[in-house]
Amino acid sequence: MSEDKIGIMSLGVYRPSRVMKSDEISKLADIPEEVIWEKFGLKEKSVSEPEEHVSQMAVCACRQALQGIDPAEIDLVIYYGSEYKDRYVWPVGPVIKKELGLKNAYTFEVMALCATGAIALDVARSMLLSNPDYRRVLLVAASKEADLIDYSRRDTRFMINFADGAAACVLGKGAKNELLASSAITDGTFAWDVYVPAGGSMMRPPRKEVREEDFYLDAPDFERMKTDLDQVTLDNFLQVIREAVKKGGGSIEKIDFLGITHMKPSFYQAILENFGLDWENTIYLDHWGHVQAADQLIILKEALEKNRLKEGDLVVLAGAGTGYTWSAASLRWGSLG
Image (tube, rainbow, N blue to C red; front, side, top):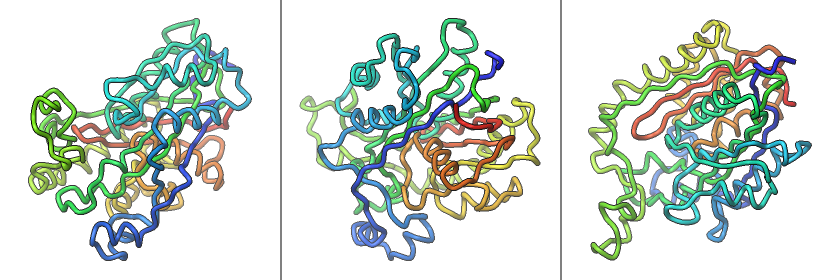
């Protein structure tokens, strides 16, 4: 099997045991439950316990992804999940290395918020292709961003789908499926539109008085952001998907499966329809919620369990993250291993 063929060899997912149902979300956000179903696309979402942290969830997902793989074969660990972690200014990768006995691996992190999935796959693929000594890369994303949502705030209720969990994969040489190409776009005009005010150098306690609400995600000018975003986001999603397919030598008309960041169903459907696809050509995470950059690997795992993927399928994984970045990666599916 060609060493130039880089693909996903295994998948691992961790879902917290706590589930927040749509009726609970409805009460917290003071939004009718049918709106939670129809507009936000949520029947339920996964939420971690207070004592359950990103590093633990990441380790659990990695442990599942490493089943049947010798830990000594892992050359590199890339964490690409939420930057809201166990500690401030602190890396997750070394914990994963220590807990799983990855004696030959070094670690680093990649961050483009919810768009990082395709970008991290591209980084790992490039490193495997450029270094003859590397054979296996462990990628993992985890999120506990449900912590960051104040359900009473109207300007941030578009983020009430934020959920917790983790997903991991081993990307390696000689895989039975192939990662073909990736694409990304960043529009910096949205750079200051969503953030957590407290904790950075601009609002560092105790140098400045910090309110409790400053520790939740904020969208200071939500209406302007929404208006501007509505004008570009569909086109940018379509562009990165088309580019990822074209650069990988595929045909837009022959996309078989599309896995996208969890978003409102109407917009998700609009993307599908632009490529002649329907709900049978994806997995919609209405029972998970939006697990930051982990969404795409969770979708792949569930698609395999539900027999939505077959050998030879052209698969595209796409995401978008505030900042604002859109990304996509194309794969020619074979099987794991």
